[in-house]
Image (tube, rainbow, N blue to C red; front, side):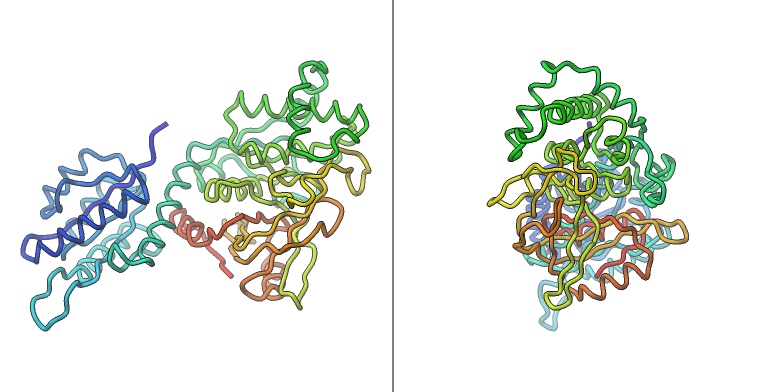
Length: 447
């Protein structure tokens, strides 16, 4: 697989103060290499269109940082757009280094207007833009968000998302078409019937499944208390899913759960999905493909599993929303004082499922890839903190104290027709996801 690469294009003309420009060039190069080790940097400023094109001949970038080291006319941006029509561009304006009544050293800002005007002629949506010097904290933060968004966009294009079975009746909000996944996100959607994995699971011997049972026992608390048949059938399911994921290069997965795994197999798939999340395979239940996609995006950005659940409780006094699901959260999200406790399904009374409250965190992001009433895609974003709360209901739960009004978030998401499943990411990744939305030309609704 090709390494993700950032191309730094410091453009300008030789009639401005090159000593100042080169000083900013060196500092900018250092910052970009800090943020992405595989940043491609020219040997010197690109002070003519031929110099720019010669450097671009060596590139195959996933993100372009187009910086006006000095003023440059629109011909430079036109060449970049002609050469790389589909590569995201972030336009970077340098702050004027000296204001003393004398010479205009860089005139970077005027150059940015020329470049941005041209970019908007070629492309839909706003220009991704950064203003300031390479030593400024806000510049580093903004570039970090854009680079992470571009890296995620690249990862999506090589990702395979598996749909195991179909959504239950009345849960069509999570159903995805392979053409839509590929067109809007670059993701390849593959499908397999739930019964196929159930049949595979039934065919495994106890000896074949023993390593999976031992692994699950190390991740959870109380698995030995589950009736032997259910415990062994869980291990069979774990092996069936793990084998399928490995053999087919699956990066994310959405799985049908009820009623099939209760009625046709006699053991739920909940804990299998929780462990898959810990293994780096973003996994949602109720066959919610866009839920799994949301979880995958969060996992790539944070390096941690994302929680998946329904908003089930609003507390106006503490400005919080509790997210819950039957029991398939990643084991690593469990509170340290309980661990990933094993239990039984709250409605079907069959185990193993997971039963715990999730650990606290100073910053989390509530996120959803949603489908608007007109069929277009949109991204939901809100931030807050994961509160120090025990399990709120049977299953797994996480309570978020939101930065904005929790009451307003609940009212608006209901009124605007958002889906009832959300991912909660451990970390503040709202800026990166908003940048990704712009790169994918999607509506972003941010609270």
